[in-house]
Length: 127
Image 1: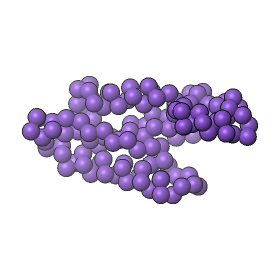
Image 2: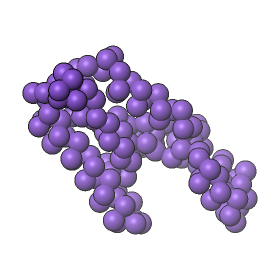
Image 3: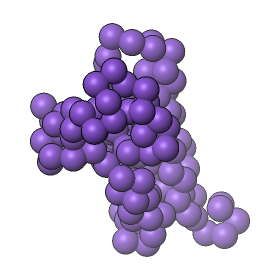
Image 4: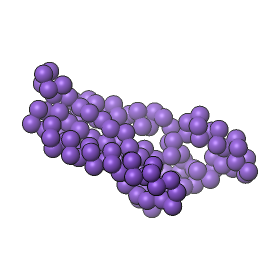
């Protein structure tokens, strides 16, 4: 990137790199580390016109989450409804919601964005 005049590094973290939860401390610590590494790298590489940002997805409906719903005592439909209710926007995220944020950070549209945290969580962390 340095030799080609710059670029964009996008590190994937999680909302749990921003807020705590009473489970899986190593996961939360690792996501917090990604957040701080991104900020440090943004400062280190700015002179080379390399932008570094982190993306913090919230709950996203993926095959893994869907499988958890299949195993949930409440059943898959109730599981999905419960996850939807956690979000002020009214529904869980879709993979493309995260992809659009990453595309923005990868594009020249974000040429003045570095050291930032893009939270894509349907308002979950705003509660």
